[in-house]
Length: 273
Image (cartoon, rainbow, N blue to C red):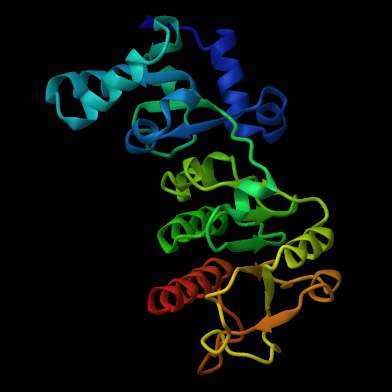
């Protein structure tokens, strides 16, 4: 383990860029995960650099619990120069949290193919078009993993899935779910349909309720932008529509809630199949 005490150190400057700029992350093929639980759950093979604050390290060494053991194991998997202790005021400069927990990692960005997203079993694929809220995207990853999806497809207009807010909201699911960013969503829909994966567009004017659709077969669930829904050129390419019945005066559901309901309905149907 080494120590950095200057905020002008190049490693500190670069890490601040990774935390704040998608372009910097993309250029170097990395992303940032922060928080004791999130960092210690990260795949050690992907971790490039591990930062820990003085106060966090002191607390871990004092408690010597499971978290300390996980930190020690992760540290042991890295070169000693890649485990860096920072004074608390320097750690705050690289932190993306209002109340830093004192642990942050820089990881290699994952790379997946469409085949990875489709999985080896019966595909269940949330497809997100221009969902811009990082909390929504992260929550979709989190609940998608719990519902047993095979992978996720996003458009470039979505919040960056490797931004700190999305990573944090995913609660580690971003480490485990294959995902791709698709520039040509209509073309992707056609490819999925050719593979026998039925694409359902979530829309208020759809003909079939979510519990009446057969989600036991391979399927993709398309969720649109928070304010505008799915774009017309995407809806035109989708073979079926699906809607979630609502009572009262509610006009629409949150994108993450819609994706969760549909994914869990597929899980329910498949568990009864």
